Structure formats: structure tokens, C-alpha cells
Image (cartoon, rainbow over all chains, first blue to last red):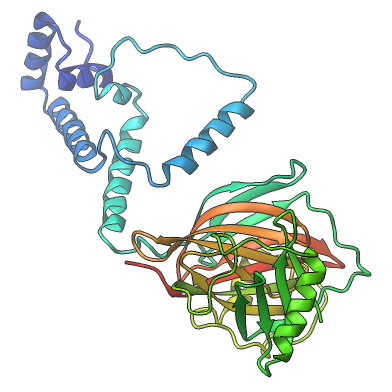
Length: 211
Length: 168
């Protein structure tokens, strides 16, 4: 008794990986089994959608940042899990896992939505932190985008707390003036009062001077 | 000029002498080309009620800053703007956004960003220490919040918003 074809066989059929005898047998079943035909057609459509909307090679936006994050993640991974090398490398090999059929549809939809974004609907709306470097190893920087606030967040953790007795005083800078002769930037209030003068010291670090 | 003499005295005291000629990294000439404009503010987020927020004129598109901050920093119901600074971003020279002498930002333009906004190199300073250096694309509808150090019962937050400039 023949067992009905499973997803693996359907994928092999769509990938053109069947041997002649197997192919003939499969096509015979396909001819007589409407349910199987429908399943094959569905997977063929999913495959076409994925091919159309998700290019196999795509320029990654902000590639440097992604690469650095991936490398950092790899570095953190102290227990690598050995992965079995797949026997074949056909385009549809990933579909051999049955649960991925639903995911493929979602991926195709996401791909279509992504293309819509690129089409100008929402691209360019968000600020992006491409990379960050924290000179002090005790400090960690975490970057994310808050959709709710439509704001990009660069969260610094591990900073020393500023003593409560220290007064943090702000200024309302109305305009600035620069002086190339003495390499300074002067910050003025709305009334024209000099609030601060920023200059560089011998180590090229900023120094804020108050009158 | 009175202001100039004050500044000169301060700087001479700081440098005790010679400064290099104009180079990238030094402040720009008076009418330097600009790529855009940013608004920077130092905000104190706290659990305790502080001074009212409405005294400060918020830049266009950021009138709901309080609500936005509340979504990112939910543990703090109150936000007070300690200081603010609107600054041109110079094309060839560094710019400084200094809403407070304690926490401030150095901004270098890296030109207009594809899709709008500006490519910037940012350095966030606390006194004489640079806390973080970042490359970022800043876009006018989307501010950057930098979560800074804890202070008293709350936390200091630096807000940076592109108010003008950037390519399409």
C-alpha cells in the first residue's frame, strides 16, 4: 500500500529533486488526488510569493551596525549548538519542516509590507542609532526604538550616580557665537547675557567656563 | 569689546598660551555653512512632582514630549526640562549642544541622510568624560532620548530633536 506523499515529497517535487521513477509515481498520485494537487498548488504559490517579495540577496540597511551586533551576539554565545548539515541545498529545503508552511505565508506577507515601506509609506520616519561605542567598559549602551513614543532610545546603564548634593543647573541657550581666534563657542541667553563659554583644553577635551 | 575681552581672558587662563590655527574640530567661523538645526534638552525624570513643564517652548513636532518620555521611562511620572539649547549643525565643524554644563553633546554633521534626516556623529559628555560615541540618523519626527545617570530620586535624560534640515 502506498503512503500518501508528505510535505517533504512535495518540496522535493517542486524543487525538481525527484528521481525519474519517484517523479512518475508522484505525478500519478497528483493526477488522481485532488487534495494533493491543491496542497502542491498552495506550496507553489507560497514559493512564488517568497521568491517575488523576499529577494535571496538584499542589501541590509545599516549593515555595519547589524554586523557588529551579530558579532557581539556570537561572542556572547558560550554554548554553540552543533547543527546538522542539511543533505540538500535546494531553494525550498526549508519548507521540509511542516510548521514552516504557515510561517512562509507570514514571511511573504511581511515581505510585501516591507516593500510597501520601501515604497515610501513610512521609510525615513524613525531616527536610527547605527553604532555606539562606550569608552568606559563599566557602562553599557542599549539601543532600541520605541514605536509607542516614536523615539529612538540610547539607554546608558552602569553610570555613576550623580551625588544628590550636586546641583545640576541648566541653561536656556538662545544663540551662540564662535571665535576662531581663541577657539571658543560662547552661549548667550535671550537677554544677551553670556551663560557659558566652551573651549578645548590641551587634551582637546571640552571645558565649560562660567563667568 | 567687553564680551570678547571676558572670553579671551577665560580662554587664555585655560590654555595658558598658544592655540592652533583653524582646523576641523575647532569652532566655525561666524558665517559657517550649516546642514540643519537641532534642539537639545536636559530633562530630569523623577517620581516626585517637580516644576511645571509648560514654561519651556517645545519645538514643533515635540509638543507631546512629556507623554513620549512617559512611554519610554514609565517609572517616572514627572519630567522637568532643566535646560535647553537650539543649535545650528555646522557642515564642516563640530557643534555643541549645551543645555547644562554637566551633560552636553558634541554633534558632527555627516551630511543629509537618504530618506530624509541627517547623518550625525554624536558624543555625549559628562563633564570631562565622554560617556558614549554614536553614529546616528536623526529624523525630524523622531527624537533621540539618551538615558543618562541617576540623580537624586530620578534620572537625567538628554533629548535631541532635529528641527530643521536633512535631505530627502
